[in-house]
Image 1 (spheres, one colour):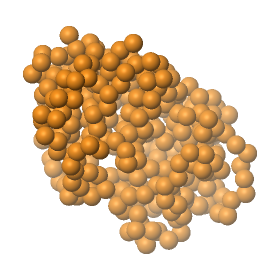
Image 2: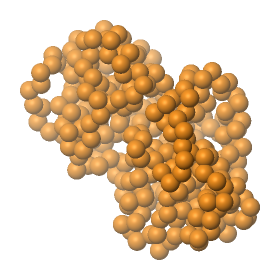
Image 3: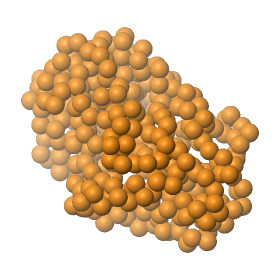
Length: 335
């Protein structure tokens, strides 16, 4: 069994796909007998991001991080994020001459441009530098790998997909709902970088149901009073909402995967989305939903052609066990 150190700036109480992936992978690795040390923000002083106060960034003293790395004696080091913790662990590995792996989870260049008007080329230059010394950079989909290669990322890339908890996300008999059908569901952060307003603006029959929370919720609730905002849901409550809906709408153009998409499929729910990285790798035929640069047309097509049985069968192919096996096989020894 191996000693695996994972460094991440994204951790609980954040609710997002990165945290879910890292947390579930860590628990599965431990179940397999590995010793896993996660260096994450909870032990260190933090401050909110000025333009995104729900996200905290910590600034630990370098010596505290280096000491934790040294005392753990890792066989493998994986750096999951490009924030302060990731930078310090990267620097520690470079000082010791250790090899390490990284992963590309988040489109920070696009988000920072939208939220803070930071030119994308600046952020991409930093990200190429950050990942450039990685022995292996893990990416979730073929389309993301091709895009990053076009942008000049030089680190060898390997696939690290995502999984679904099939005990929670599975088809159920559709119950009566207090909303007009079809029920169009969105699950995720209620924030502008998720492009959620493209979904809310759709002029389609039925009810728009929004599960999640975020900085734009109050504004969007006022602007779109016909939509139903439910806040966060988790576990079986969330699984029941997926299964009760008629269509899942994924309006993001910037996610690198979209775990919610495969949760929807596993629940027997077809998906409407833009032909962007993530959905373009997952929604591969009309039985699973539809992709279109006109999100309204995608929704209409997906409602007409989606096959719940085919969706559920596709969703069942995404397991956390296979996801963790990919991660294990991608790890590199420090020397």
